[in-house]
Length: 382
Image (cartoon, rainbow, N blue to C red; front, side, top):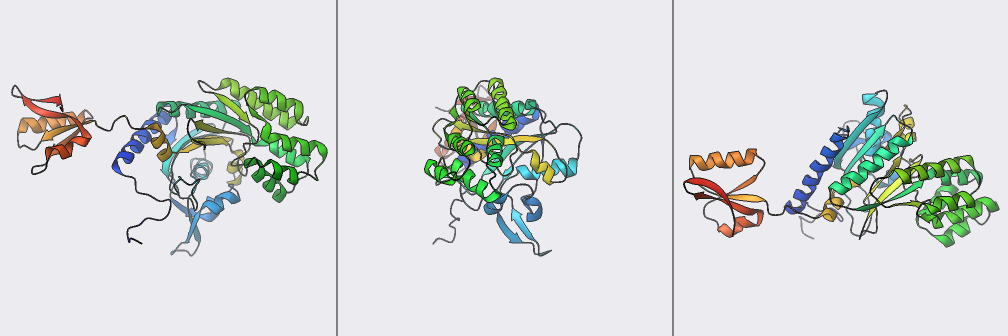
């Protein structure tokens, strides 16, 4: 094995990809700022006692751990930034009322999400704290669709609600381990497994749980669910929320999936996922996680979303591959002034160092500076 070989599912980011990622990072963070979301930068490393608070067992399995040489305590390399931002809202900012925060940074996963995934996503997201009403969910979901549209990605939004499954699990008197096993089967849409796992349950709960994977589609699914699921107040309230959200989403196809429970262990209400054409997995995920704030000692309504900026950059493509201006190497003062003026205006100006083939500079330049009529002028490269 080569000494410079990287670990499995870890890769370098080369200039073309890095340019796309950085361009999108600036675009999305500026879009967040225009909506009132303040940037925060949590640390890459924390003690696991804090890092896993309120997140459930899945986060622990996803996290690389090491021993702090200063204290002997176990630390973790974050696998998700969202709980860190919840901690900042609850303990460091400690504001009353609504707080809007955003972030962008690398996370590390013990295993990749798929065969073509990475174990080092660049996570970017936005979180809204302090408002329990659907208005916050509507704002967050429309913000997600807005940033995807700004990146040139058309997406479909899938809505779900963990309250439906929780109400059915409680009605069936499922224990914690039983509920988690059934949850995993529902996520996999494993109909034979669901049938076997629910065989001994009361008929009403059994039939309802078996129906959940088939309750997927447009707004008509909500009416079907209302007729077919048990008349439990929390289920009908969840269906009402999903109906209101599906009407309030701007400019995107919306579908409902009542078996969509990803993040079930720390989500507390509405969950959602954005899907782009040509991708089997969601490009972004989010939802309500009010209980995470409670776990940090300060109950705060919370909703938000996150996505992998590297994945979004690959999907969005690159419209700015050749945008620079080639300048000759010269001691001419007028040329230096022209170059500096162009750079201050935001242009990329690349100096062609002497002794190199001129063609080697052209992949990043579509224009050049030439002396025309005694003045340095930007002209297209033929």
